[in-house]
Length: 302
Image 1 (cartoon, rainbow, N blue to C red):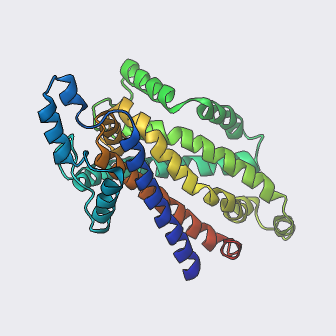
Image 2: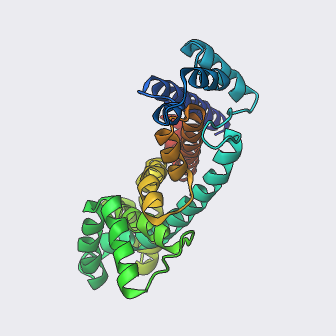
């Protein structure tokens, strides 16, 4: 188990490095740089050259990459050219907000999606299953932007949801409900596959109550494939949070990434990408470890 965890952690570290480096290079190669606003404001060439020298943008790309790499090793993500603050401080502040939003959405989606999936998979003719299936399909087919706007419209017209900027309820629902629908569909299919397994048929023949059979034995066995995609689920959360944060005015990492890209703030873009990669790698590692605990065969094939 320790070797398995170390291999997964090493793969996650490599992923984080590649993502951060790619974001740094691609932002550098994109048209424009952090002095674009000075150019648009009509600043003199001397002023622009001085600003480029201050930011290190006049150096070769390899030199800038080496500087960024040395900073990462030393725990320094650089200085934001847009906010004039250390990138590490900015990223930590916004990453905490995004982690709070993503955690709330993940917990809510799990508490809603998994039980509904068990019901839909074990009793497909139950009224809850009949209602859940079309609602899940509708939520899965709705893009995050459209769903966020629909929730905003609902909140504005009915007053059922608070719209104050910084309130957690609206962005959490915007992220959690489509994710809950995805988990419900996966869990329902997994339960359908498990309930006909020989060991559960034998357990039913021994007189084990159906409720215990479904909610203990079938639910536990059906979690294996669901846990296997939890890393992807966490990645989906952080990908979808960009749109949700923009629409609902949530001050998270997605909004900071947007501002950094708009201002061609290379160090800040790389720092945001690095933080997002850390979250994704950690999510994958946790999902792999949970799957290895539930199903020891996962360690053998890793």
